[in-house]
Every structure is written in C-alpha cells, then in structure tokens.
Amino acid sequence: MTPDYQLIEIQTLASGDTLQIPVYTFQGKTGNKKAYIQANLHGAEIVGNAVIYELITFLNSLNSDEVQGEIVLIPMCNPTGVNQRNLFFSTGRYSPYDGNNWNRIFWDYSHENVNIDDFVRKNINLSKQEIQANFLKDILNKFQEKLDKINPYRGVSFSEDYRNILQSLSLNANYVIDIHSSSVSSIDYLYCFDYRQKSADYFLLDYGILMNKYDGNAFDEAFLNPWLVLEKKLSQARRNITFDVEAWTLELGSGMKVNEESVKKGFKGIINYLSAKKMLNLELITPEQKTKLIPKNTIKSYYAPQGGIIRHRLKEGTKIQRGDVLYNILSFLKTSITPTIIEIESADEGIIYDVSTNDTVNQGEYILGIFPHG
Ligand SMILES: [Zn+2]
Figure 1: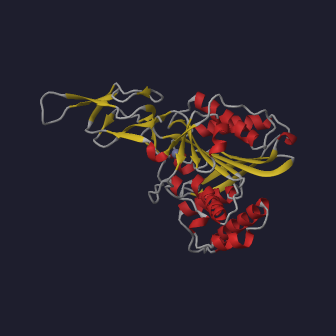
Figure 2 (figure 1 turned 90 degrees about the vertical axis):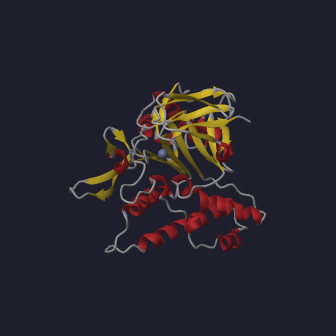
Figure 3 (figure 1 turned 180 degrees about the vertical axis):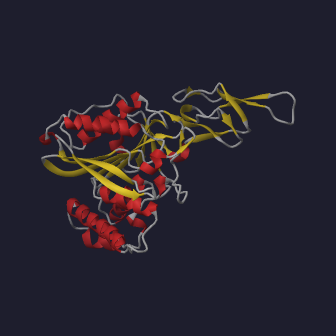
C-alpha cells in the first residue's frame, strides 16, 4: 500500500525558505483506531528516523486490508532542532527562541480550567466507547477553542505554533509513540506510564522507566495525562475503565548515532505493539522476558565529585555490584604538583543504563546512571 504523503509547513524563515515536516499516512481498509509515531523531536536523537524508514518500507509491502485503522508516521518532526549545530555537535534539545526543552512545550487538556468531575457525573452510566468518544470530543473542542482565540495579527510564539501543529495531528490518536535516543550513550529502553504497564512488554525491550512523577508537558505526558485523570476520577466514582489510549517514549541508542541494533529493536517492537493492538495482522512475538520496569524515582545518577579526565569508565549495559569501580578521575588540581587519581566505587547494585560521552568533566557533571536491582 502507498501512504498518503503530505508536507506541513511549520515556519517560514527570514531567508525566505520554509521549514516543513513530512507526514506519511497509511490508511487501512477497515478499522478506526489511529497510531501516531514521530521521531527526532530532540535534534541529536536521530535513530527514530531510520526506524520510521523501516516502518514505511514494511507498510509499503502490505495490502490495505492488512492494516486496521490509520498509522501516521512523522520522521524529522523538528527541523529546527535537527539542523542545529555547535561545531560538529548536534545540539537541538532546547528551543533557541525561548530556551524551552522541545519536549516540555505541549498542551495538557487537564491543566485547563475544565470540570472533569462534571464530565464524570454526566457520563458515568455510558459505555466505555461512548465515554471515550465524548471525552475526546471535549479535548478536541477545547484545543480548537484555543486555536480560534489566536489573533492572526498578534500571532503566537514559534514554540506554541509548532506544538499546535504536532498536537493537531496526534490528539485524536489511540496510540502515540515518540521515538527519542538518550542524549548520552545508552541501552535501549522505554518510558511507561502507570496503569499502562501491561502493554510495555509488546515493545520487546529489556528495560523501561516507570513514570511515577510527571515533569509536565512532555509530548507523551500531555497526550495521556488527561485520560489518566479521567480514569482516576471514574474509579473514585466506582467505575473502573482503562481507555484504549496509550503513550510511549522509546529511548533507542545514543544521540548523534544510528546504532543499527537499536533500529532493529525499535522496528520490531513497534510492529509487535501494533499487532498486539490489532492494527496489524501479524503473529505476536511473546517476549523471552518481561520488560523490567524501574520506577523513575529509584534510578541512581552519578555526578563528578571533582573536575578532571574520566578514565576506565564501565560501559552501558554492565551489571555491577556495590563496591565495583565505576570509573577513575584524573585531575591536575592547581593545589598540588602531583596529579591525583580517584577511584569511584558504585554505591548501588544493578545495571549501568547510560553513560555520558564526554571524558572530560567539570565538578557536578553527569557521569552515568544505574537501574538498581530489586
Ligand atoms: Zn529526547
């Protein structure tokens, strides 16, 4: 099947050029669910573009009766971030206009002045499908109301304009997948929300971070949070519903790199997830092991206790015991003629999941992170 291909203009530039994002839509013959998958929201995190290429190639090989519903794919979803450089380094994590993290700019319906308790009272006796449809209608109406309020003469900031474009394409989806990479060197993992743990295994990744504290306004959070708020309020009113709505952030490999293993894993996981959600008719792969979900507040981060050069640092994926030497710092401190070497031991037991890529550090810089065992 061939996708519908659309270019959406996101910004005209002072030079007269125009930044655009490509939108590939694969429309199945039947089904009414929607999956929305984007890549490269942070400029250095490029792996997802290769994953989306593999998905496009794969979906091209199917017939439209082998896809149920609509699959929307957006590679290079943030051209401003993708193109940004300092020397040869991709930066592109923060908007050059306002300094905001590109993944903290999104609109969350539940942060609006809306009365969800009232919605629950009015809808409590309806079917799950009717409640889902009514709540989605409310979200989309509120979003449209905000768009309508934009005065064309006054305009809006680029961050707001940009987020409105991405969210207008994704707010009515059932499943949102945002493909990132670690900005350092990392194993592959995902972010999972509470009450959605059951679906995490479909991505076939060994590890996930369980979000127990929201940073707020990330793409996945802003999408799913209103639904989680509604589910909570319904359960307080003794109606337990899990809506057919999920959001995932995949962290595949490392910034500025395309690790082919990460591409393969990302592609395989997404295909398996879409099959589990009955959007593709493929045989489901049962994972050899469940995804181990690590509560976000239990992750241990290590920062340099003093400035210097990092040596003998253990790699991501290394299993460690308490007392193992994680790395050395070689320092030429001006207070001593003799250079010093400090051995840093692990205070934790677990697996190193990411390590910074720069071997020279100032005091307080991030060195590595550990998913603890147990
Ligand atoms: Zn990212």
